[in-house]
Amino acid sequence: MNWLTNFINEHKELESPESFWRWSALAAISAVVKDQVWLDRQIFNLYPNIYVMLHADSGLKKGPPVSAARQLVKTVNNTRIIAGRSSIQGILKDLGTAYTQPGGKVINKSVAFICSSELSSSIVGDPVATKILTDLYDRQYNVGEWRSLLKMESFELKDPTVTMLTATNEAMGEDFFTKAAIQGGYFARTFIVYEKEGINTNSLMYPMEHKPNYAASADYLKELAKLQGQFNPVASDSKSAEYRFKKVIRGRDIYFNEVGIIYDDWYHAFRDLMKVQDIKDETGTMNRFGDSVLKVAMLLSLAESPQLVLTESAMNEAISECERLLGNARKATLGKHGISNAALLKSLIIMELLNRENHQISRTVLMKKMWMHYQNSQEFDDMMQTFDAAGMITTESIGNQIIYRMPDKQVDELKRFMAGKAGRQ
Image 1 (cartoon, rainbow, N blue to C red):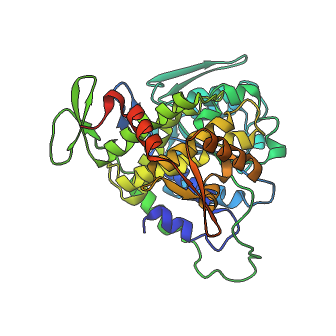
Image 2 (image 1 turned 30 degrees about the horizontal axis):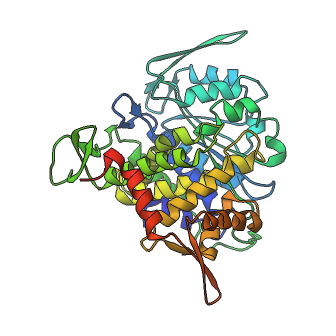
Image 3 (image 1 turned 180 degrees about the horizontal axis):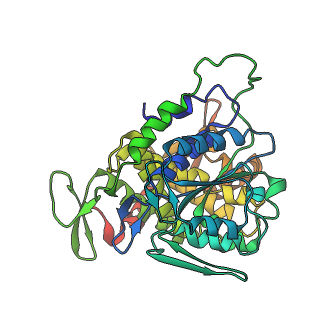
């Protein structure tokens, strides 16, 4: 059991959805490691700062996970926390002001954890707010000085690194979910964690069996806060005991470790499916999805141990968790200006069947895995009938189960297409 799973288990008696605890904990890790650790992306360093938005109906207990993350980061006490109601100008002013940590250490870098249980009330209405937050997210491009000239004031920030954890509901988010926010890049950079119901009913009138120990949780984060440097590379020009998986890429021999081959295979398959299905994504989420997966993989690896090494389990979980969130931008915005959900659902189903060992899955299991990406069972069944008519799948009845299977011919054709010149040697 690692730090993250332990943190989630400590809260399983409560009503908040498990995913809210998971992503709030990842935001807390992100906030304490800041830009002290990174992954070499050849032409830039990728830092694990993330934006997370918990989206659910009012009363679904979004506040407790946000509060827990804020308490943890406050206990570590290595970054400024911006909480409560503020304007974007107030945030920039805070980021541009040096502060002194206990012990007299002066921090002049523009690092912050924006943390609020209600997004629309935490950032006072301003048409430029999401545009500035979008720009601040990209730490890899904001190296050195960052300047903003607004009507009444100018701001100069140094190496701005922002992690954000907020929450909202449909009614409160209406004013914030503008076309500019959705199509301008803010949504593409934000993990939207959408839930419709809690996991328990708990009156909180009796003692918990396992009460959360935030002091112990914060102690682990303090260890992570000491880390400095680059994550271990996942590929090399030379073969070795670690880098033993060979691919010929544009005439060059490249050698990957286990983590690298998992990501590279997945990334090529993902990009190829986007082309095959001609996915329309006005948010930009899909084009940034590879970096999003890597950020989460870094955070999940840090949850396993305080070492700068990406793990296979973390990479597989990052891919799974991030794919699960792909349809949430559409749900959070009622489908306005977002990803074409039919094309997205089609691609995810193909990927699921292609990656399964026997290339088959029951209707019940598939619906449970894809529930975030369709509105109702009729939409789902119409999609599967389209697949069947096109010869992409066969539909069989075994007992009381409906089984979908991808024929071997389709499997071979898709694998040949995706392999291309980058096929594993």
